Image (cartoon, rainbow, N blue to C red):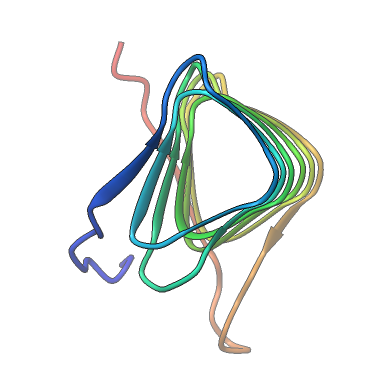
Length: 131
């Protein structure tokens, strides 16, 4: 369903307590626990970006697979899959090919599914509450 290819490894970390002001470009995988003021963009495919519960991002996000459990102010572009964990807070438009949204996640903006083929419908998966 989501082209079950092996995920790229997370090779980089922006740790909790770290503030980066400026654009960030990464390859493979990136985990953010700190704060980034600037755009975040994957330079190669496939890519994975994890924004943890403690993370704050103010800028655009572009990656294949995006997992968010923190706060984002700006548009999010996930070319493969966007996973919104329960504490995700997004202020901005969201473009995705497939979306998985857990109960509690919030989006203040428009949801824009991207479809490669004209006949293909975007995938939407509602995650069950495992509590």
